[in-house]
Image (cartoon, rainbow, N blue to C red; front, side, top):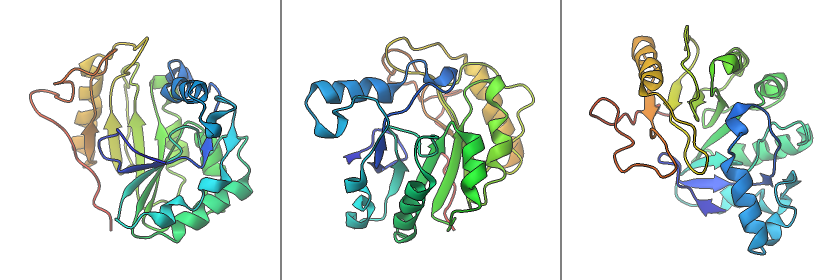
Length: 236
């Protein structure tokens, strides 16, 4: 496992790696690039490149972390990918349930499957569920997220590719927005991020602005209208 570069995350826990294209947000997938880089470096865990692979040997990793941490689950895959059996997802949840000192963030683009299996899974307060909404056609994922009985339901509007007219954050507990970074990064209009921020404020939803994006993250890229926005829900 590894320390995370995500601002609000302490650790990444990759008990699976690999995925396939789901929607436009996947076009310049960081995880795919990183997996192939790891394969070329000879890392055994990535010997299959970005082919979906389960890493059972990593399942107990959170049990070894002593300090209470924010842990991102499967930054190199998608926990709710159709190729990951429900029995394996249940094992992931078993480990998370044993670690109430940590906060686990599960983020998926497979919102429908998340909603379908959610009622078969435990949702203690330290397990948060989220979906990616990168453009207006993907706003339907919010409806699936609302069906999940998690204490915190969050949305990652990243990479933000279009404006989101009519955005409704009812039933959502955290909004995160950011532009695309890295090779081929598509430009984000700051007005799109402002729209999410304004709906968040009106709805009383914590708002976190990561960066406006670009091939290389600008030093001041986390500024929106002269300030940073780094709100995070308070865990109960």
